[in-house]
Image (cartoon, rainbow, N blue to C red; front, side):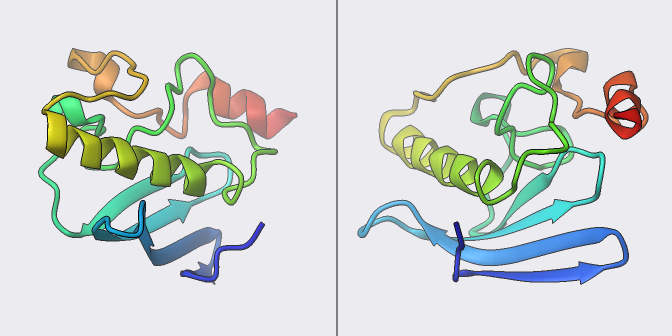
Length: 133
């Protein structure tokens, strides 16, 4: 599955994809960036428009989108960005637009309080396990 609106660069071991997404024909345009390094969870930022990260909007502390609960299902090295992160980002944006209309996050939720909000670190046990497989 390809996404012609995404432009990809590979520098060293890092893949960076940037593009503009729209959830519906009448929805806003969102410029996004996906950064992926092997054996780590991809990071997705909304570049434009600026969205202030809030606890209830499913952001990690570093401003990246929380697209799945990595504690329940860690990132798998065989997952494809085109089949996971890109559609999950579109879904997140749709729920964000619904949030703007309703004031409630209507998508699935994971706990985002205290230490549990931190994103997975590249040196955690699950990452080491994935490297050895």
